[in-house]
Length: 279
Image 1 (cartoon, one colour):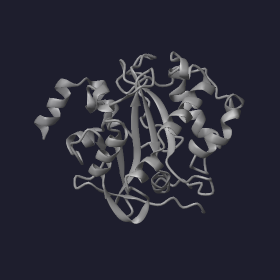
Image 2 (image 1 turned 90 degrees about the vertical axis):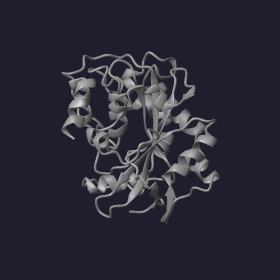
Image 3 (image 1 turned 45 degrees about the vertical axis):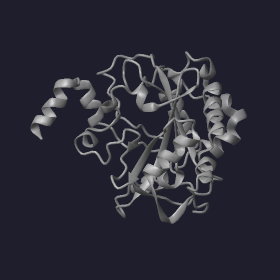
């Protein structure tokens, strides 16, 4: 094991190892990675977008384990948007917080408010109503200004909503017989294959969540990647150094070896629980 760790240090920079070791689960309104700005000079370069959707029931399970209260009175019935993230480039994960003086202007997205509340909602009732959108704009949206479709706050959120409508994961999965069920387990490998067939040969990256309460694995997130012209591309092909997208724990003891699956069980069986509409 010591030789393996030393090998990783020999082929990857100290910065890469630190960034992966500090990776944290992202909650809606909180950062996926701890900021290590002193290690990476600020850079707005990126090569593609990662569009991430999350399963709200699993988001709530994670939140409750972290002592958040989930807002179950929202009119949410399917997959929701987590974010549209500039990715790749010199910092590998992608640039973040590219404009330190930027402020979230709620009036700029007022025309989108109804759809944002339905498809890109803040699922935690114990955080500020606009806190999730503000977080996504400040951390990711400010780095997307060089692309015409995401050149300002309004356009950034509009583009996320546009991508969501183009690929409605709830419907796409239902079309191949994958529907929410509190008791049934699904084979995540078959889910991946089924989605590849529906997405013109492009495989998404599927993330799973293992609950500390019951030890079960749940479908968590789906990542679909796009070029800067918003043509769908394979995420793993864009991530030439895939180790930078996984925690050090997962590198040393991975659940699966498939780069399209993150934190999923080797045997492949996961839960896809129903969305409960009341508190």
